[in-house]
Length: 317
Image 1: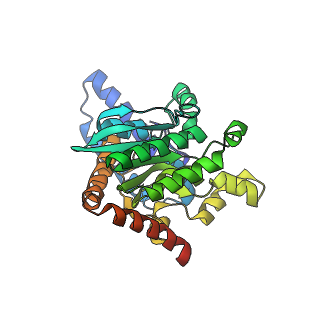
Image 2 (image 1 turned 30 degrees about the horizontal axis):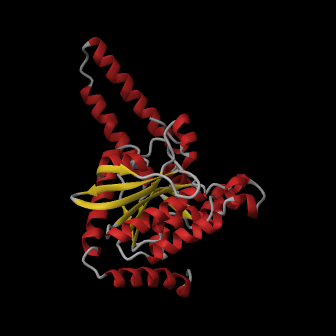
Image 3 (image 1 turned 90 degrees about the vertical axis):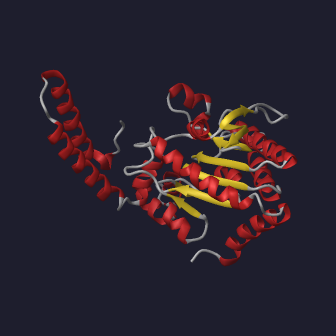
């Protein structure tokens, strides 16, 4: 397991547990009692540590390399997934995964950003940072779902839209704006879940939903802490201060009414118990989807638009 800086005391205890287990395996020693004592100590430390995470520490957890990504959620929660590729204009963007699937007996369209889990897959998926063709693909799939009356489920996990020159040349801002417009215009339920990072317009392009949820230790912000620090202080060393100021945690955003629900994570974060975390997300999606599918299409669209307009009217306290 990869341990974060603030988890070093926990890592030391878990290393002792692993050593004891090896000793027991090799010499026939009964070390169960000592392992149980140390395991209880680990759980206590995890509970104490994760109960008081700072925004910067939550940012680290949201970026944890072992955290389940979009492809993991699709494999765990959806059946008969049929990927659909291309924007019918330029190319296919592997940073955006999308396609038809069945979610607990119901046909849906699932779309998400995939970061990749090793060097090869991260390069393939461009670390989850989509180019214009990715957002145009997402828009095409949402319009297809709207045409066939299929609910849309989006899984958000990106540091932001790709800022390269080639992306700008092909109309990055316009593609994101059109994707947001499509989110607001479709007449089917749209449920969005921030499963890791929700970065800037690259996230909003998929997260303008009837229901927007965040995992407990995910983040959602107009800019990364490092980017904010670079602009305000001209130094990335102030990323921790920027994270505090951005109010990017799920708890802050729920209080500010930017999101609708915080999905609890297993003790120690989603990376420690992937299956439990994904099951919790699936249960939350099912609960909201059951309530939304019975609503009139026109009402769904009107309420979605009113929800986001209200954020601008009321402002942030």
